[in-house]
Image (cartoon, rainbow, N blue to C red; front, side, top):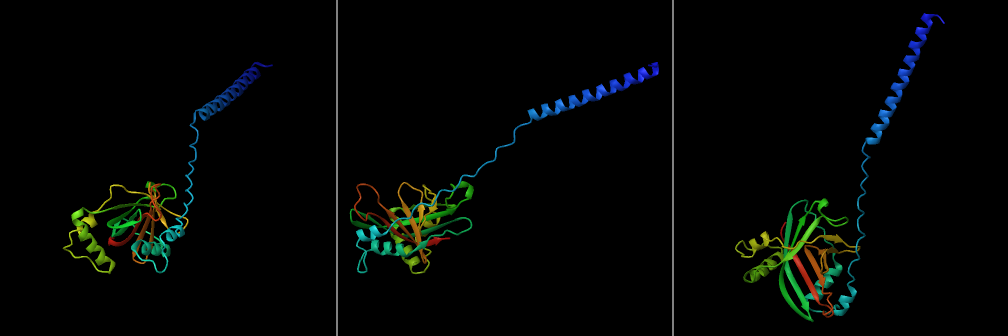
Length: 235
């Protein structure tokens, strides 16, 4: 081989070796980079909503209270209206509302009338459980010296009138916020049920919101519970 050809052969060989070495280095670097890359984030799976709970069966209570056509008393009247009522829908887009009404508490067969306030507030869906309604609900009452004024409010509202501006209970009802605020869920029937230790059901009949909260304790007698009717006070 001539000297010139030998030099050219050596140059080509070195060039090919350099390209091959560079290719191997690039592949190794790419492999190392891929190894060090963080794994892709795991896809989050939304928790499925809970199935709707069963609605309350009213026939046993209507039977225990003997709520026939000739029945008298407020508990039978409200329970019969509750059976005819539709689902309560709190459709105020934002803010809160209050209702005030009569609650008839039956204990050991004895019925007592009380004043009761119902409060509801719209909540972001992110702040309630899967399948729950986007609201919080609570109840409460007034100080004893304002109860009579509260009953006057109820009478006015139930007749479609506005209570007097001088009614001492009016401002207290309009400012009421319950200490305990419960979530709510739509049942498989017509009721909305509060998520609470005591089972509380709500429905709506025309302008009224109705509440039925049976006393499920072992010491209760048949028909014991709270039967309430409310009219909107602030919306």
